Structures are given as C-alpha cells and as structure tokens.
Amino acid sequence: MEVIIVDNAEQVGRIAADKVIENLDGLVTPVLGLATGSSPLSLYAELARRSKEGLFDFSHALGFALDEYVGIDPEHPESYRNVIHRTVVEPLGMDPNRVRVPNGFADDLQAAADEYDEAIEAAGGVDVQILGIGSNGHIGFNEPFSSFSSRTRVEILTAQTREDNARFFNSLDEVPTHCMTQGLGTIMDSRVAVMVVTGEHKADAVAAMVEGPVSQVMPASILQFHPNCIVIVDDAAASKLKYADQFRAEYELKQQLEAKA
Ligand code: GLP
Image 1 (cartoon, rainbow, N blue to C red):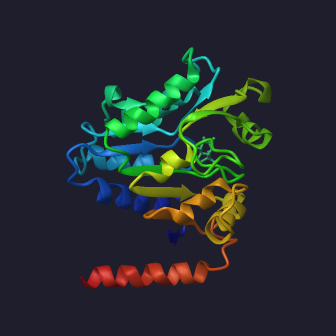
Image 2 (cartoon, rainbow, N blue to C red):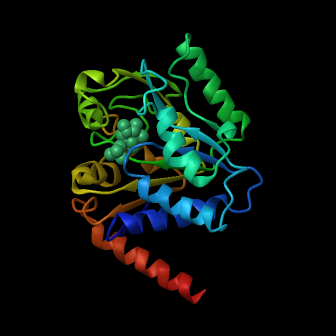
C-alpha cells in the first residue's frame, strides 16, 4: 500500500488523476471501477478537465460502479445510477452504454448480482478501481464484518452509513436500508486500486485502514493485501497516521528520483 499525503482536496484530485491515467494509458479497452460519494469528486473534475482538453479519451472505456441502493426510485436524483451518470459519465465523456451500475431494481436481486460479477469478468476485470472510504471503514457498501472473499450481493446498511448519507436525502427515513455492492473479493481482484480521502472526519478510518490490523471490523484494511493500492489523502485525513512523516519522506524521494529519470 502506497500512501501519498498532499495539502488539499484539489491536489488529491490531481495526483489521483495522474495515477488513474498512468494505469489506463495504452489499454485497448480500459476498464474503470467507479465510486460514488463526495471523496472522488475532485478526481472526477480533474479527469473531466483532461478529457475536455483531449489528454485522455474515455469514450472507449468500460465502467463498473461499486454499488447501488436497493428499493430507491430509479428516477431519484440520488440513485447511484443517476449519480454516476451526472458526476462521471457525462463530464468524462464516457459512453453511457458502456457503464454499468449494479441493478438494485431487479426482481431477482441475487441473480442480478451474480450477473454483475460475470460481466466484470467478461470485460477482463477492472484495471483501475477508484475508491472512497466510509467513516466506519466501508468500501463500496461493504459494511463491517463483510466477508473478505465476498462477491457482489445485497447488504444491509448500518445505522452509521444511513446517517452519513442522510445529507443526500430529505430525511433519514428516506435513506434506503439495503444496497447491492461489489464484494470485497470483487474489489480485491482489481489490478490497481486508487483510494481518495479528504477531511478530518475520515482520519480515524484512514489510520485504522493503513496502520491497524487487518480485520473484518475495518473492511478497508483488506487493502493491505492488495498488490497495487495507492491511497491519496489530504493533511486532515492523514492527521491520525503515526507514520505520516515516513510516508511524506518516501513520496518526496520517489518524486526526486522520477524527476532525475
Ligand atoms: C458511500 C459509498 C462509498 C463511499 C463512501 C464515502 O456511501 N457507498 O463508495 O466511498 O460512502 O462517501 P463520501 O466520500 O461521500 O464520504
């Protein structure tokens, strides 16, 4: 796990965009794993800028979203299908027919979940998975005690997650109770994982994920086993990391070596 600490959200977005593009560049059909939430917004804004300037063409990329609410009206502006369309597909110039979101509206939810994993596999797997982290350490909607080998499935949202996400709805009652999410096993199959985190309210989760034991209590800690996971955080989100100085020094050294090469 590589940890990069920068000053602010704008820099998080810029460096994360470098990592995303570096790892998609040259692929005939790049496959991008997409996260919702506030954390990746600066990254999407930067990718949109580069797309508009002609620096990268996303029109031939495939996209797979991490998760979706179950039981939400599909036309609701906060259904992840709509959020992904509004914040990623349109601004990046992706082809809407090449971007999928788990089908939380299916009659047979588990069949839809199984089919989603099969579609990812048929696409050759996810090349770059973009991730945020929930304040309780969830990735996608894999809440604490999700199996580390889980695949796409229906999950129950914790009270904490429903409260965190109530800001997107008129009231807490409106927040769905269930979701369909890629599993931790599905996420771990991605070739590169790029996590973006900003803000002091995520500092405990970041410290536990990076420096704590790998434990089902902290689902994101499974990423310690990911072969190529890059975590990009601002100073506030890094404020509880005991090894922050070491991460800063390593990144600086890496940049100096890259500048010389
Ligand atoms: C959401 C999503 C996650 C996201 C997380 C953090 O509910 N399901 O994919 O990473 O919670 O969201 P935010 O970045 O808004 O804090």
